[in-house]
Length: 206
Image (cartoon, rainbow, N blue to C red; front, side, top):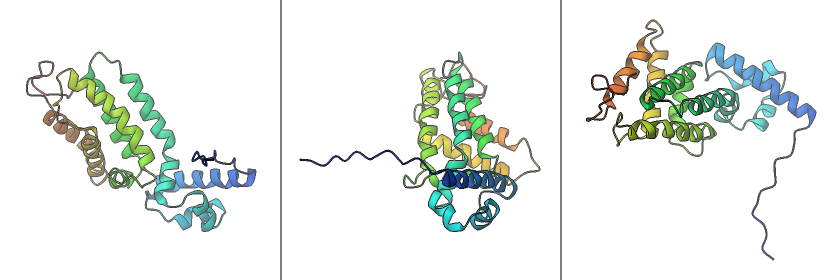
């Protein structure tokens, strides 16, 4: 008789393990906000009142911890993409969503760099964020391409890499709060379809 390859569902955490998990997540959010995503994992564990071994049992590496911390923000971005999916202006919908992605990536110092490094590494725990993000963005991009506003050779993978690069550039230039928006507008102008009739002067820059 063939053995089933289906995986059993994960066991629910014991109450003490759940408390440790939540404390670690809370301290990680605070530490990432105050010190950036490269902050010491040992410090996060110490502030949570647990050993580093406990942290690694819950989060095998930094990307796994980042993935857990940013699930709420990911949910917001995915919901935003659904809200924009039926917009009368596919070009404007894509632009608004990309702005939201840049804002999200810029919330924590170092996050944009981590997202860029994980985008081409399917083994990274952060790929759990990258996959749903690409699917959500691809739908908005496809609508803008079908409307004739964006070139057909543009891929969502490249577009998200560009938005993360913009967030990283803005992070490194804190004295220029308009930099991210200017770079996004330059990027979207370059995406314009040559025959776009809906935005002849500025491409997808609504």
